[in-house]
Structure formats: structure tokens, C-alpha cells
Length: 222
Image (cartoon, rainbow, N blue to C red; front, side, top):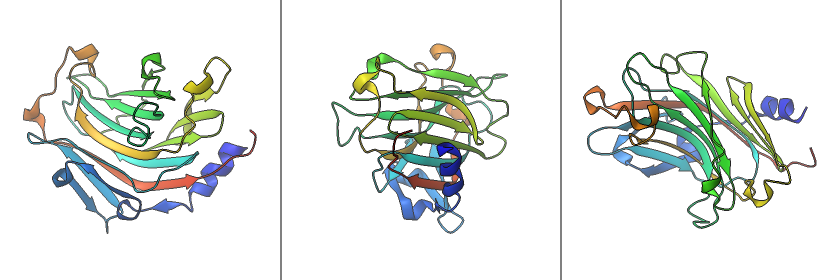
């Protein structure tokens, strides 16, 4: 019931890139369009790029529509995630969507992860094969973050649900975070464990983001 209500409410929480976000790095490779409502970020020979939200949020429903780079993208990583590493560099929280590029004949892989209080070593990554080609069109990706649960959505379909169980303790995200989106070179591990590397002859690699829905919410008990 909570999830359905939040998703429904998010439809009225659509915002634009220029209103809610600002460049993180590689500003020359960040181009807004559609009256600054959408944005594309690129990685070329000179730099990768990324942006982040102007505000920090404590829990809520956060969604974007994303179209991934086409063709050979081995080693390329595209992200949509929340983090507070700049405010809490030694005890930061994170909730991730990471899209791992494909080699010839392969598929993009979607990886989700979360951690709290700087416990990056815990390794709660899970990978998924998508039922579509995410480079052909825009698809919705969303995080629903509550006080004791996280749900990841693809096209409004829940693909992973995590409850805060006693064994997780302070490793569950709990502090306010910003939203981030980046594209960068992860050739050391992203595709087949690093077997296939990024090839800039297929670049520049461009990821497009649109239809941002940011619906912060402080929940009661689940």
C-alpha cells in the first residue's frame, strides 16, 4: 500500500534537470535539452561526467527515465544512485543502480547495491539481466527508500526488495543523501570481470536522462 501510494503521488512530483540538479564534474560533457527538462551526459577522450541533486533527501521515491549508450560499451558504467559521501566521507550511505556495459553480442547488466555507515566492504551487490535492450529507448528506474526497507523498480516493476533485518544494523542507509548520475570508465571490473575494456573508438558514450520524479517522504511505521 505504501509503495503504490508513493508511486502514484510521484506522478505529480515531476521536475526538470535545471530545477533539481547541477553538474558534478565534466561540465562540458553535460548538455540539457527539452527546455532544460532532460539531460545527456557523455564520456569522451577528455573526460567523463556526472550531476547531482541540489538538495539532500531523507527517504522517498526517486525515479528517472534513462536511455543507455548504444553499440559496444564494454567497460562503461552508467549510474543513478543516492549517496552522502561528500558530507560523511568516512561513514557514508549509498543506494545504487549501476549499468555495466556490454561487449559484442552481449547485454547490458544491471547491478544494485546498498550500504550504510561506510561499510563498502560488505558487498550486497546483485546483478540482473534486463528483459529489454536499455540502449534502444528510455526506461524507468526508481528507488523507494523507507526507514527499514528499500525497493528497486524497473519500469515500475519491483526487481529487488530489502528489509532492515537485525543482522544489517547500522549498515542500512539512514542519513540524508543526494541523488547522483554519472558515466565513467570501469574497465577494471565492469564487463566480464574486466576481460573486455572500454574502446573509445566507439565513443563518445552518451547516456540520456529524463522525466525526473523526486518525491521525498518521511514515513511512519511500515
